[in-house]
Image (cartoon, rainbow, N blue to C red; front, top):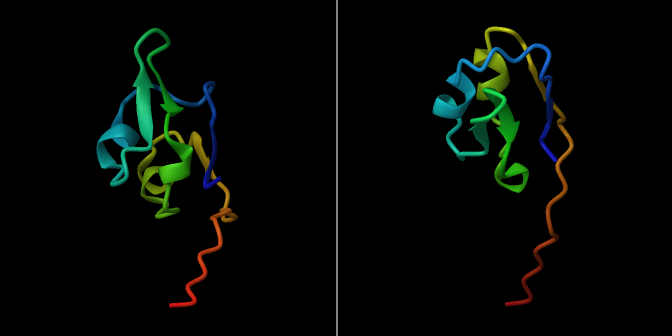
Length: 73
């Protein structure tokens, strides 16, 4: 996983992370008005969401597991 978590205590629901994510990983929970990680497997660890979060609510893990691709072509 790349986005480890979004701290609901720090998230102010501004939606900047939702707008800025190039991979459409983050969504806004309509009930709670907080950002949530919707598609963690699509995260490419660009860190744009964490860098632009005004409250520093997004925590990134630099470890990402990906399937091993082997070609014997």
